[in-house]
Length: 165
Image (tube, rainbow, N blue to C red; front, side, top):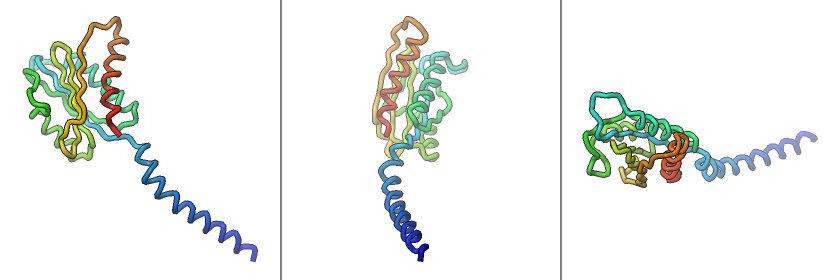
């Protein structure tokens, strides 16, 4: 007779958990998980045979850091070099990397076009439709220090990262 109330209490608790779990999975869990982003750096105006510039490396590293620090899952594709800035919003040279990102389940594809004059154009695309979600342009202004330049770069990248769910 003493065991009956304990079993009823456990069943009641189980029912509460069964009601709470779906609500948690639908409303809370998606907000805790970050988006998946694949980044591609495109250098323009550089000789095709040389190593990537230090400026491009700085941007690539900061892209990875900012997206990771804001809770997103981020990968990077190999860097591409083009003779000049592409005229179209989505450069044809990025198509292979875009398709690879899409096939690997990435939600977003970010292209960072770094021009020789150090202007950087960040373009964020949705991988399900190849629709451009946001474009952010960074124009290099001689900073007082390396830290100031890094902070400016991170601030620009953060404007793009804020667009992700």
